[in-house]
Amino acid sequence: MIPDSVKKIFNENLWYIATCNDNGSAPNVVPVGFKRVCDDGRLAIGAVLLET
Image (cartoon, rainbow, N blue to C red; front, top):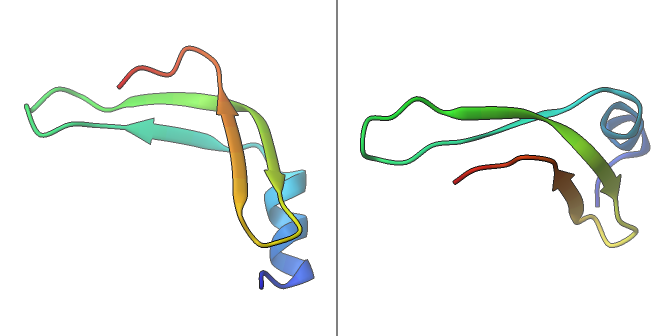
């Protein structure tokens, strides 16, 4: 399980998520539009304009 202190950091701070591939292109970095630490310890992440 994720400690409450870590959950607080996840829930209260702005996140950015990045994707990259192995073809040498630059990573795509976007702010996370939705984030939540689920009760079972999983992270739910939704991002706007995320390219892969």
